[in-house]
Length: 154
Image 1 (tube, rainbow, N blue to C red):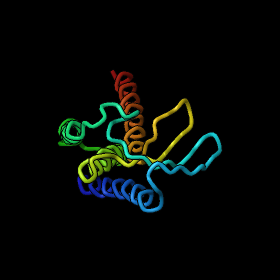
Image 2: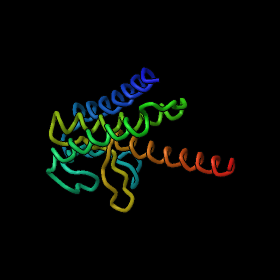
Image 3: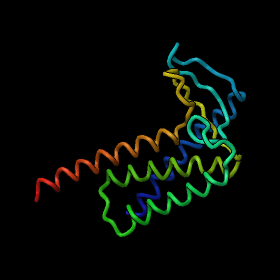
Image 4: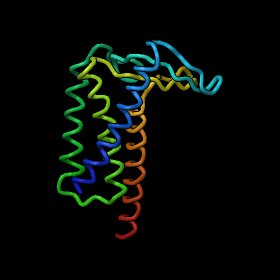
């Protein structure tokens, strides 16, 4: 199980880092390319904070938080558990997203963001952020489903 978790995690990290590397090579900082008019742009920015640039400049706080969260995920949700294939993929996506942004913070002191959705002045984000959000939503759905199944069994 750990081997699959590791392999899938590496794949998610690779996808994230490849996308950021391509943006870094192909675009200038703060450059924006319209993909879908009035909806989606690719806009290359450096984010030294979290979503919407909150806690700007707290690099070590984010690095430490990521390391703590990774340990919590492993200790409480993965270690000594028999995960289903879907859970392995979802946890790999979550871990890969966290590590993808952690790599940026360690190497550069900021996170490379580029997905710019023009809805309600939404924050510019990246593939790792997407992996994290999707994984958390899926884990909540999976947990809710398990809770409903277990409550019916009683």
